[in-house]
Length: 170
Image (tube, rainbow, N blue to C red):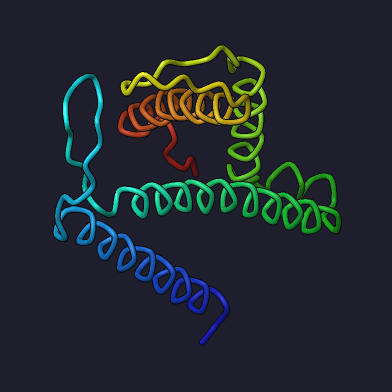
């Protein structure tokens, strides 16, 4: 079994494990019941029992995604630089570089710009509580801005891909 098949098999296993954990968390969230009662806006509200577990799992998935993008971007960049070092100038012109480095750079720039655009103004939640913790306010803004920017770029790239703009030229 060659190295590429091992990598594909490992990534299938990792994706399968993440899917099974996600399925278990969703079953807990939707299937167990509503046992937490909170008082908000003059009303008694009933929340699902495993809301916290779902939120923690969602944060973990976002973290895994960000680490994967940065990790694979760095590894891909290092590999392409090492591989190009031994090529002649003519061979360097003929070889194509991957998009992983550009994805890494773009994601890094989006996160930095999102951090500087984030606000630290207190926010009033639905239950009347005011969130004043600076890191919570900034993290939520960075996540929202990053999601918006990456969603827009994903849609644009999908449309351009469907038009055939990125087809391999021979």
